[in-house]
Amino acid sequence: MTATKIDFSFSNKNIKDKSYPIIYALILIGAALTIGAQEVAKSDHNDALQKLADAIYYGGYMDKQALHGQPWRFVTHMFLHGGIVHLVMNLMAFSFFYHRLKTIIPKYYWMLPYFLGGIGGAFLQYVWTPNEAAVGASGGLCGLWGCLLAAMFRYRKAPATERPWHIKEGFMVLVVMIVFQALTEMFIPNVGHGAHLGGLIVGTIIGMLMPLNWQPRLVASRKDAVNVTGLVQHGNTSGHYFDSVQLEPAKNFDAAHDFVIAERDSIDWSNKVTLRYELLAGTMPEQSTLQQAPQIASAHEIRGNVPLPLKGEEITLSNLAEPDERSNTWKMLLFGVYNNELTLGRKSSSESAKSDSSTEG
Image 1 (cartoon, one colour):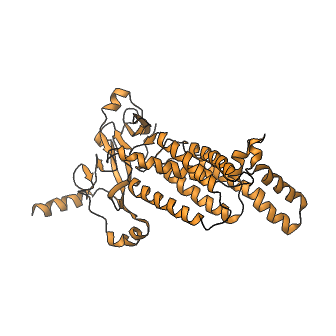
Image 2: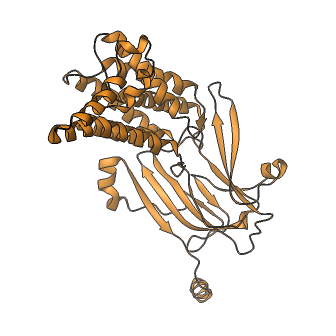
């Protein structure tokens, strides 16, 4: 395996998940075949297209027929929407909850609260208003919402150094969002209160049982196996953290024997911790070798070949200069966070010698 540059995110935001764009595309297709087709049919007076749109819409929405021989409606209604505004709002919520949840749970697990929340929400909506039809992904989105809220609540048991940096702020934001949602729904007509509540309940239950990721760490075959070439320092109301690190294999990195591996702890509902590994460069070693591998990076410190002007073999949040918060004030006010990018590089030999001589003088 050829050693290449490594750009690693401690917030797991660079995890690739092929399921999300597929579900997103299916929602858009559902909208195109119903909302879009109906608009085109009206303008062109196309009866055939109108019949197609009606067949998909009326054959897929959620109503009492789901309990009388048409169970697919529990799922198909999640891909249909009542209008452009309904569609856009749900797609925005989908993106918001997915990108936050995917960083703290195992890959593809987000589909459990999404689909089960959608099904549970559809059932409660039927109980709530048995004589009305319902469409929309809101039940599934509230499933993601509840799962994320429960996961963040559970993180209170994780060690501070293992807890994802965005958890404290994220939990309070979600609580405020729930209160705001409940208040606004009182004044908005045609809202599926049962679907929202059912999805939130199901998602919360799943979130209390689902495995959670702790903060990842990077280990290597040896401390000098890689060089640090860049950092992104993240700031929020709780302090400063390393959001990501860029590493480059050293010149003497042997891909056949050396390695760089991401360690991820996963905690289940009973607080049992399982360690998972992801090979980033080199060759996967035996378990005994891996257990003794030195840690080279975490969200709190960077070790190994640290380039100048940062001296020593370790970068910590205490010896790294604080970012200029004045230039980030607007980001702190609007979002509560900001990023500070640091590109690191070694000085040339002449610069180093000049620096050393001036220090001695």
